[in-house]
Image (tube, rainbow, N blue to C red; front, side):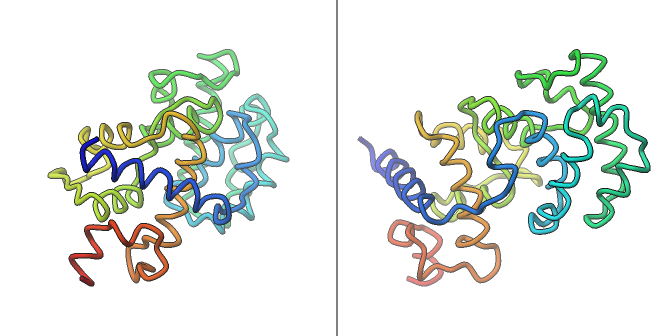
Amino acid sequence: MQKSGRKICKLQKILLNWAKNNLRKYEWRTTSDPYKILISELLLQKTDAKKVEQVYPKFVECFPTVLDLHRANIKEVEELIRDIGLFYRAQRIKKIAEQIKNEFSGKIPDSKNELISLHGVGDYISNAVLCFAFEERVPIVDTNVIRVYERVFNLKSSKSRPRTDKKIWDFAEKILPLEKFVEYNYALLDFASSICRAKNPRCKMCPVNKTCRWQDKNFG
């Protein structure tokens, strides 16, 4: 096996082992309901998860199904998400509920093409729903995940918005384990948030520090 292949396998094993005791506990991670997972991802856009923790339970209690959400008044939705801001999100969520009712008979679609046809849903949210709700082996890529791959593998993007770079997505798919990919994706998100942080990364306690290109460059 080539050196890069060995490093990929090592990262997979390290993150899956790290996940056993370090994954964050959120209510939306205790369900495989595609509607609830979609709602959580829409609420998490550009928002700290701690704020969403306070809103999500109330939201799914008031609107337990996509049809309940479709029937809701926009003011009700705006009031529920007031604490996390970005009020345009309420319009987006309502629009998505309308699309799902009218175009997919009230069921959350389970294909990539159908998911990204929903208003405001792109690669990240569509893949999150496919992975966490339908257990499909697809990568999860956001700014934090890209930072991990850039530091560990010296992976660079020439795009002004790296999360739109096909090269990054192809690499993320290549590195995704064939098994336990749901746990791996959660581990990657949480590792990026708590250890491989943008500012003041916790390199001394990082389980990947012995093979990290970024640490060698900055602290070697």
